[in-house]
Length: 454
Image 1 (tube, rainbow, N blue to C red):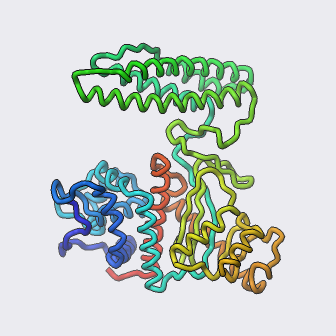
Image 2: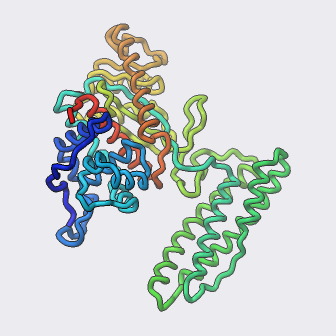
């Protein structure tokens, strides 16, 4: 039976008197003082299943603490499992029992069970705790946006075609392991496709590259035909082994998804490479595996393949709010939603707001003033006078300098909390990765603002 809280600690559960040990002790105290953050975690772990039988499993508190350790020390699941088995400090912080040695797969299964809504609820519990202790009131806030990469290779039409051919061929080979053997046939073109992709990469002659692309499209067309035949054969597959029947249904779903993506990739390759057409960013497929990936362009900076996130920071350095959007929305369109989020969190709008120049617009200024925000300072005025935004030039300079501090917060999130690139798969995995990193960052920030003696 799964529990919400960990049992009473042993006297041997101690944290080392080091800098990391002191920070973990402060984080542990904050978690103990905020028990309401465990409620949504517990609901995600148990779902609608019966909870009064079966093995105990990890408690909701242990899952949260292990997830924080993973993000706090930037660990993989294998590294986290090792440290939880080897380090007394980590075991004490995670509040593991004497016989508990969670494996990497167990840790991944439990941590990945937490939804993005749960992580947001945990973060709001932390913000409420900061407000109660007087550390962060949310009266003066700063907002900015940044791009977070998805875990994809650089997208080119040739490599995307190769990915599609490779995945579909693998599924076709897997289908042949069923009994009785399904009645479809295919050829393995992976080796010749790889040669064509390397030739496209190395050649500087446009005619050679175009000829290779035409050959790639021909191979892709053949593989798509193989896949369609396999779907027809596997859809009516019958076997005395029920596991093989279930496996065939799973293969049909995976093949249909892969064939749909390959068809779109073939279409955009013909349009862009063969016909010389400019394909809109909204119609492009950037990854065969992380197909939710967007193209993010900010000014003259390098293009990022991922998603844009919008952050609201407070005077204490805490991240008070986060919005993750699909596509590449303009910063100006997100000013009002960010302010509405602050009202949802605190029950009121902030008194002062400072934002990056990308948020500057006369519409946003009027909307903010109508909400009762006294001072709104944009880093770039964009034709708006200082006295329209704030009460004096001194206030404008003070808020503009304060806004620059969120760049440091973003830098810490990306360098120390792995937010430069999300390695969690899928759109929901991306949001969970971002939210969990913000939770770990906020806990560490609070811990450093109120250190304790170990």
